[in-house]
Length: 315
Image 1 (tube, one colour):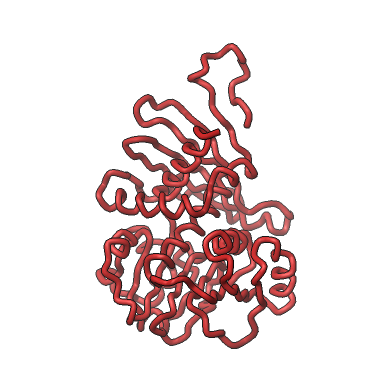
Image 2: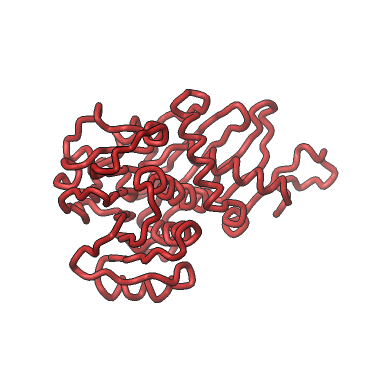
């Protein structure tokens, strides 16, 4: 940990803890994140967490700057993240940014967290919360579409909660999928490349940036579908066949109406899309197929910041 203030004689209560990627990861235990996001979902619906729609501003050639604030009675946060797809060709990270955490009473900045690490971990934790809430049993097999950074965060999260679960992976082609599995077995030993057919899995998770559906199978009772990667109107990972036959949930129903390209393309009835908080309240009819759409909200970053502050206080 480093002190943001150059003046070592500065009052102790003005010190700001700055956490890099590794330090941020160490503060964000996945099991604690799942519970913190469940609490935040209830608070968000009740209005005790305020999380306005994210501000998106063009940045450079094809990039965007995302500004995402949220406040609660205990803390406030501001996540400022830059997404620059062109960095793939530059061999640089596509996402850069920070999460600023402040005390709600005094406004004092408490810490700065690594933005991509917070985003990756809290997004994977939302997926795990959806599994816990909607599947209502421990999954034995999961199919993961995607081989990027978010896929790795999901593998870590699944390993933390379901270490014995078999995890199938499907990437852009067979070689890329095999390489990804071979390179990430230190994160989860039960990784298996997936061929052309869909295994008999309990959960399907899509974490791609595809503009065309990567999963469009008929809805199947007992199989939970979770769409994560499509966060722009022009993106779509889940097809209309799957969506039309399922009960639909979203982590942020207001945000989904602007950002969930797969749901927008399918022309879903938004009055029938249920919130994460509603799912947590229940009851859940497990006999009906379910789709959970995750688009993200700063409320989940606030939940992650609570976990980080608690971990810092325990050190």
